[in-house]
Structures are given as structure tokens and as C-alpha cells.
Image 1: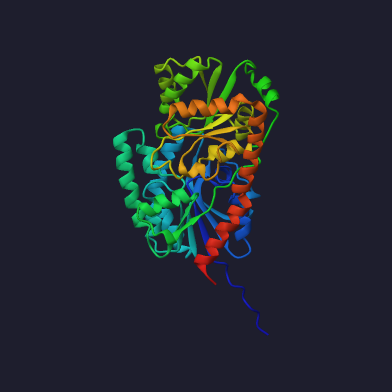
Image 2: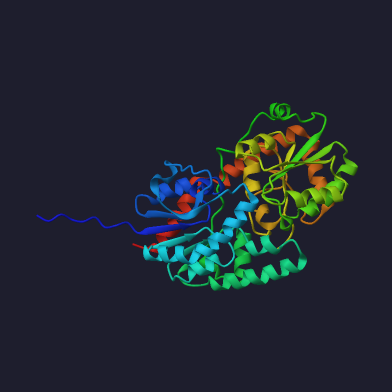
Length: 404
């Protein structure tokens, strides 16, 4: 009597330049997605290698990993950009290798300029993530750069508009921007971003302030993440100069960098804000960032009012909300889909310094009310950014595209 041969599982490729150990921190639904796909698909993850050589066997349990022959230190701005150049140099060979696998679908999580378009040309079913508008990130420091970036991005989006392609946007506002740039609205799925509940969570604020040596007589506000001009750090520092002229006990804490620290220090010195702004640099772990955020009177989420920022959900938003501290955020359309002013956070009018200062004043005027709103923000983050829901939504979209 003959034996039946089991059919091989269809392959789903997850394409990202960083290894899964880093991606699982940046996109915390990766573990849940690997688990959700495992019964029906083989997940192949394509990336660079980890800088420290460590590989998380449990994370990689439900995936096969293809690593390029070099590593990346994501916390080192210079190494990150050098290795990104090497990534481009190896991309053609990597795509040929992936095409030879005959995958059922490619999940293109790498949105660096021109890469999604090269993936789309393979002619395979493809899902493209669109959280980062890289032309705007690279050129958004200048007005002419933002003008050029808008046109480059529109050209890229139009090149994705094929029957085999679906786009994942994190907000309705982002979906609207994609449609305005030429993407068929019927090919866009809205799936919120996942939060990292393990790294960002409430701690006892007074204790954190003591441990970090912060002055209990002062009020502290933190902004955190990669420093770049397109986010509006220069605009924020202009506003801060006006804020501390009115509130001498306010201090801005800048956490992070990845290459923009020197520029930010020059901007601080240019405005004479050395005593009112503290830069702590790129902290070793997200748990260290969490300690600092929990010591703050409020967490800031600031973005300049530009097309690339209007629909996004910055990771600083859901990570900040997850600490339970009051969050003060720019009222751009995407952010305003999540934060309801005065209910689970505080919003200020984009590009309006007076509105920014007024929002900080509201966040600090009544500590009991601010604490209540901070707790509501944490609940809102759990509602909107649940990693299991995000993973299941991606699995459903993959099923729909791959078919029986």
C-alpha cells in the first residue's frame, strides 16, 4: 500500500534589513506572526546578521533565516548607514535567491527607497508596509527636500499599483495619503502598529526620579527616538525657548539619536538652551528608556506638519502611552485617530508653539487629572496596538492573497 507524501507548505518571505532579534523589538508582533503562520506556511526571514552574533533560538523556532554575509549594529549610526549601503549592493543577489524559493508571498517590511519597487517587479504576491516615508526622512531637513521627496514618493507608490500588491497602512489618514499619491484605495489595508508591552510599562515615577538623580523641584518632559530634522526637532527647540522663558522650572530631556546628536547639540547651543535641555543619548536598552520615561511629568510626541508625518503612528506614541505617563502629542490626523484630547492624552495644534506650551500647561496643572489621563492612555494603547491582533490581521490578509 502506497504512502501519501505531505505537501510542502507555501513559503512566506519576510524581507527586512535588520535581523529578527532587532525587528522583534521594533515590530513586536513578529513573534505572534511567526506563530500564526506556522500551521499553514513556512516563514523565511531575509536580513543582515546580528552585530553581537547572538541569535534568539526561541524567536527563530518558527522561521528559516537567510542572512547576508555581514552584520549590523543598529545602535551605531555610522555602522547602520554603511551596512545599509552594503544591503543595496547585495539586494539583486538576495532577490534572485528568494525568487528561486518560489514563495507564495513576500511581506516587504523594508521600505528604504526603491526596495519595495524592486520586490514588486518579481511579479509575486506582495504586501508592502508603509510606516516610514524614507525619501522624506532623507530629504526632509529642507523645504526643497520635502518638495522633492513628495514627488519621489508619489512615483514609488504608483509603481506599486499592481493587482498582486497590497499595502498595509497604520492609520486611515496614512491610507488617504497613499490614495492621494496614486495607490488604488481598494488595495490598502489599515492595520495599527503593535506595541512592546514587555519593554514599556508603568514604574513608580518618584522612585525613578530619585534613581536617575532628577531634581524634584523641576518638571521634566522627554522626547525620544531617532533624531532627524524632518521630525521637527529644530521647531521644538524654538518652542522650548519660549516655554522656559515662561516656566523656568521646565526641562526638556532628549533621549536617543542614532546619528543626529551632534546636530541637535548645535541647535541647542544656537538657542542658548544648554541649561534647559538635557541630552542623554542612545540608551543601552529599551528598559533604560522606560525608566527615564516613567520619571517624566509628561512624554512628548512631536512631528512637524508635513505630508510624510500626517498619517503616521510614531513608535514614540504607543510606547509612551504604554508607560501610563501623560502623553502630549502633535494633533496630526494619524495621531489624532488614537489620542483623544483630554481623554487619553493631550493634543496640540500642529506647527503652533503657543498651543504646544498650553498643552504642557494642561498636562501639569492638575497632577491627579494627568495621572488619570495617563492611565486612560495606557488602556487606549492596549486597545489599539495589541500585537496578537496585528499578527492575526496580517495572517488574514496573507490568506486572502495566497488563496486555497
